[in-house]
Amino acid sequence: MCRNIRVLYNFEPPASEDEVRAAALQYVRKVSGSTRPSRANEAAFEQAVDAVAEATAVLLGELTTFAPPRNREAEAEKARERWRRRQAKMAASASG
Image 1: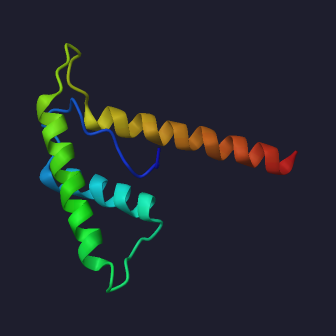
Image 2 (image 1 turned 60 degrees about the vertical axis):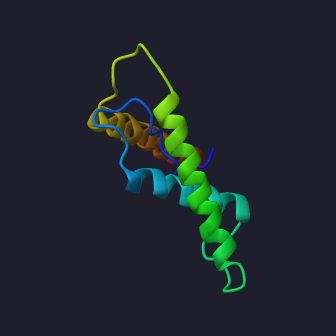
């Protein structure tokens, strides 16, 4: 999965429309292989982002869980720790 697409489900407060749209944009960029479409493809690109955002919102609204809601700050700290471990591993392999 693209590292820029974040988990949006089971947070308190729920994911915002902006977060859903950002994830949809990242997905369409990844699938299309383009961060910025040409003018000829701009309408199709935007239509795809809208469709993915809508499908994501429906999915998030229909999922159920018994797990307690996630804490955004705790999840961000876990991500930072994973990043530190990756950086340390890359530094160790580069120096070794």
